[in-house]
Amino acid sequence: MLCWINKVVIVTDCSDNIGFAIMDKLAKAGMIVIGFTKNQNILEEITKRLSAMANANGKIALFECNIADVEQMIEVFQKIKDTYEGVDVLINNAQYNIDCLVSNGATEDIKNFIDININALITCIRLAAGSMIERKTRGHIINMNDIISYQIPKDSRKSIYIATKATVTSINEILRHEFRFLKANIKVTNIACGRIEGKTEMETIDPKLQVKDVAKLVKLILATPEHLQVHEIMLDSVVE
Image (cartoon, rainbow, N blue to C red; front, side):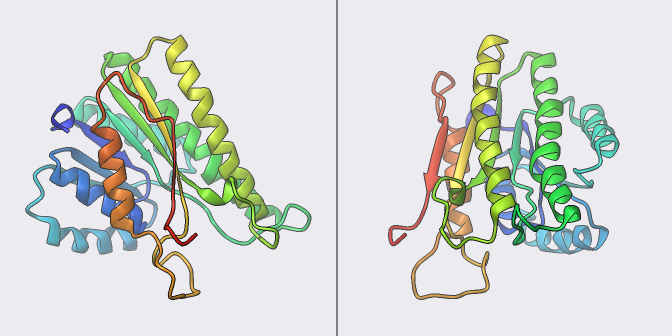
């Protein structure tokens, strides 16, 4: 992780448990960590939680930002450029996740899925990659995905969610080829996770993934040698 010390990483949803754990792990590794959230109240709550991380070796900054608002995203990335010169790592962990069927899902819900899980993800990638390419620096984009998009349950009511997550997988592979064509020194990794603690209301005795497991994996991927790229990882508990 020495190459990432004092480098800037954006986590697109710092209010998410996974996002918070990743922020903690990377800040302690010496990175400058920037977290996004669209809600001022959540921003204040996360700020309080960060007080317990005061001994982090890196720095942590929070931005109120609705990633579904393109103009707001452009403004925030410009502020980051003015303050930190640019972005070196992007963690796309923000997502919209509710039950919604293709056949009868509410139009507004489907719009939210597309706006957040696809359009916002692409906007973040474009702005972050643009910063990396402009400065000709080493970069890494990690897209947090869901294993459900590979192993579709027969009785799932999350049809639209699954479709958007499958789209993320395609975007990830397309980006890999694009960056190679552009000769950009940017890696891209798709992490598909199984059930994670605290993510569902149903509690079972089966062990689930823990957020700290995911955060450790993100750090391990970033620590890979510059010539090595981890394209895709499926992460799940041994009982699944």
